[in-house]
Image (tube, rainbow over all chains, first blue to last red; front, side, top):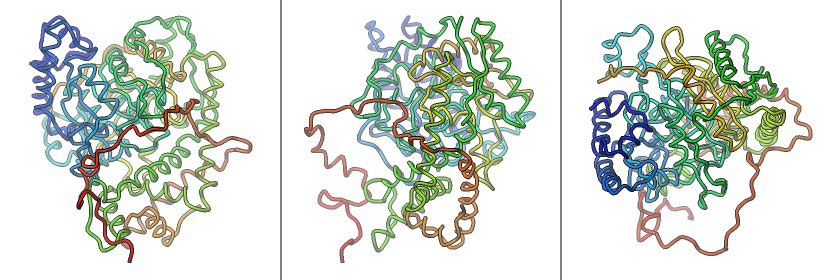
Length: 506
Length: 95
């Protein structure tokens, strides 16, 4: 049975279509894998009955030779997507017991295309974090063993707080861990500053944050509305392409969602990259950069050159300002978005004598430390007397960051190649306890892409000397995800598929 | 720029988040660490630069000015911690 969970999404699709296997079999195999992997803490809710019901319905359609592009394929859903009548909390106490009476557009699109829901996936609270440690459900363990750890040591750590085990990254840590551990064929994720791409890099899988507006944000719990985008995590570039095609598309319920039709992304996988011009931004070569990351980056450029692309140096001079500007814009938008959690309309409510006390007590109890901190920063930078100095200034810098990319693309660059993260995965409990900025630096290579609204894909590109996965990022022109899938496939083929860890956690 | 303890209390109140006296100094140092980090932005010349309003240029879609949804009060109230006779309940607001 474990065999069925090792299939790629594309392989599973083809076997379902040829009736070599049923959706019920494949869904059951995944539900059993989830049960055996409970200690990883990747899932915060499992919807076994719903999964089997959906799988049965898919089998009926498949038997009639019908069915959508994802018919019968079991997937996981990040806890920030509203799923009707099912646990949806963005892993925050403040949404305790919340069961939305509506469905997010992205998940509705997936069910329309036949996908089967296995359950909801752990994440940093309100997607604020880079290690999945801010979740009210506790941290998620990566399926990758820490260097030189035995299975026994890791298993012992799993049941005693997980300290020292590797984080799968964040905020989509549950999604990444579940996909890498073969608990689902693919998963939805979301990315505000790197929350799809950094976990993909840390766990040796593929993730894409599409262009801002490619996927509807309706029914996604909002963090920073001008930066948030939905996207998939999957084990291959092809699988990510298949998922994104179903997730994306116009939606009247989100006025920032693009009306442009969705291309057949899978058709771009395997397309030649010959003659493409790839930019390598010199500003990403940070002082004191990890030499392994630098070597990986060089190797990535060589692979693309060998496939017939040309590689040129480009300049994105405002890169160093992206992360500080992000830590003004994102908290500012969050402080506005999260004002809705008031203890009145849904979720947690702390009893109080008057309405202000009700708000203050409810929000103090319901939000975790990182969320409270960001809401306070956001409130401060939007407050009278500081708005121009912080918020408006950051939005001007955002214009400059986007202009840098526009210039590079206007010079004929088709895509930009960068490292995905400054290092391989770190340990649970290792970072950010003293100074929150230490954790924020994880997003240094990914955040520019959100600030400019561009698509960014991360593909696994090899292992560190300690045997941990490392990823490369490709950044594209707005709405040119197809080029990223073509280039991503080249990286994947050149690097060779990363062998994911054997299930030591079972 | 940096914030003092009084500013931390004021920000917390504006954000409608209760903070205890014990946690205020720690919050102050964390907020100041972030403010120090964003000081780097002061080095950028932003004269004549338009602040970003829409990251991808697109026309705001228009639709008929008609009711498209509604009549679902029970669903709206379904997740409320306290309701009465089809209303949300809050502590007395007007004396």
